[in-house]
Image (cartoon, rainbow, N blue to C red):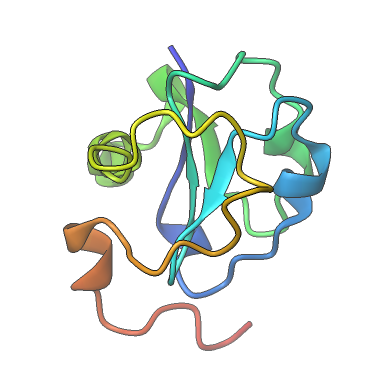
Length: 108
């Protein structure tokens, strides 16, 4: 099990969760943040600090956002396990289903 970042993060990328993560497993793509499923230690520190409530424990992800688990996993298909987001900086890509979304959260 892991935590998942879902649709409310797309085009917001607040990064409060990044500051809270003790294992540096939240990576920044072009349009949203992604939690590395193999690096996450399930501590839950990220969830309460997200201002848009985009982070869910895998089993608690709302039905309409269940596909975001796969998006978080697939984001790392070609990256492997870098072992820390800070050294990576912004990764110039998104998982294809995220990249294809229309602009989101324009009211924030």
